[in-house]
Image 1: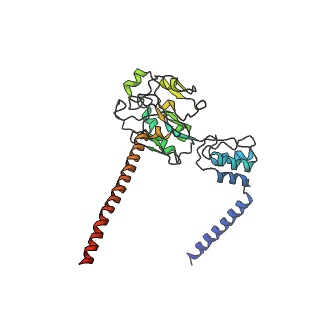
Image 2: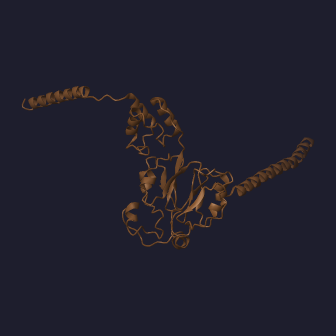
Image 3: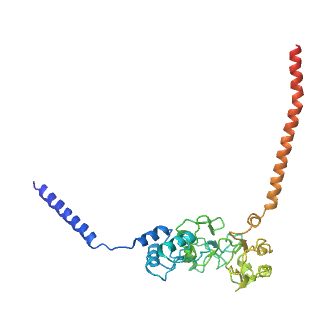
Length: 321
């Protein structure tokens, strides 16, 4: 009996408190605009803050309640999300140009870059950069410790064999979180149809760059001379591409330049022949395989024709016997 009474009291208190909380929830409930929830459902929920707001929920609230907030600020959502949000909010959405992330570094293995010391500290690019500007001789190159990889909410980045981030273009939505996370400014956003990209960030003079890296830009200006649309320029000893001027040429003259360090690299929209580099060899190989298959079929037909008379003679001999 001494145990039952306290249990009953506790159960009664729990029920009373639960009832009070339920009443308070209904009484003090804050009414929300159902349009905000509808916009949240449209957004990709990456909370990348590329739109200028802390997260998708904050942007959804702003675009619904503030007439001045545009419906096309969500780059990861693209034009599809922008049009849906515009329909819900009664606004007009401008076209969103899709972009992808790219690493502006060719990699720093021992064969490409010199090493000042062996870093054995925190697995963090910013921490490594603050220690004598990193272990690599090139103080502009990728440190390869993966801050950008950890910042990507879409798992679109991995550290590749050359110790630089590799972008999965199928997963990348162009949110720009990797750009913000990199203390060296290695990551950049480029149009997803870019014919060429720059694979270097070193702004030292050519002679100094060559001392620390074999694949760094030396500011030779060959790419500048090759571009017929004045989209290539050298700023502070480093070549840059003005994508507003770039005409995304099909023949890609910038990729045909004999860039010895290989700084001008094919972009995501480069012609196939520049992406593979062996399109002629591949075509030749396909032709050779095709010819070989034709010759094999012909040999089989000849063998069949030769064996047919022998079988006929064998059958005749059996009948005569």
